[in-house]
Image (cartoon, rainbow, N blue to C red):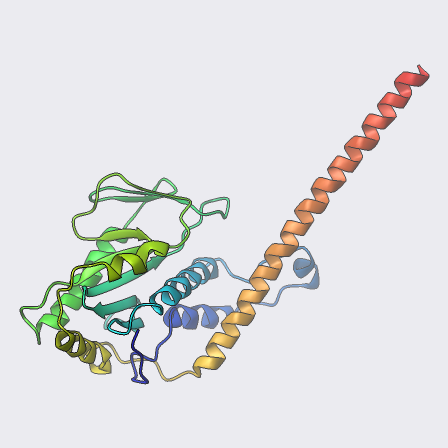
Length: 272
């Protein structure tokens, strides 16, 4: 994968969602020592989906980093007029791709089942708008690129699912490629070439220009941003471990009490 220090390409995976998450976390009151003891989550209600989204984008971003050098990858590109971004935009011999990272959990906080039909997508049995959203995102980028390169192939929307419990594709969508993130790299590099090296560079130069997108946020020290997210991630993981330990302690206590009761019953029967 090719990288440089340009304004757009220097953005890292999940940068936009991490910025939003940390901003919102700044208004969260600190947890009490008792809440921390019992594994209370440091995340607010709105913070949970943002946190999971960031983890998903980071995972997919790391996979894209392993693409061959003829592939060029961009992350977290802000979209003009919308409070959202393109998770990943990939340009290479196989074409141009907008890749949306999805990291879903169900009500039990475990990975959710994903079912995909021709025009519908269900996550844990609930209908979501991911297919249409991905199509709109790709159409927007196609329009931007074709203003300069009219005959270029349309942008392919992709949804990369991070650790789905089960992925069922009952009927392939017409436009969107839905794929397990672990298979994403292999799928990309095996695609039949449709862009020359010159076209890849021309598209990349266009994508790389901040003028193509909405004005980027004021620069934030990337190292500091990731450092703060890493610290928050450690707190979330630690809280999860504490909750698990309390569950195990509760289970062990219940088993211990049951054993004592059984022994007492056996003793009473012997005496009787």
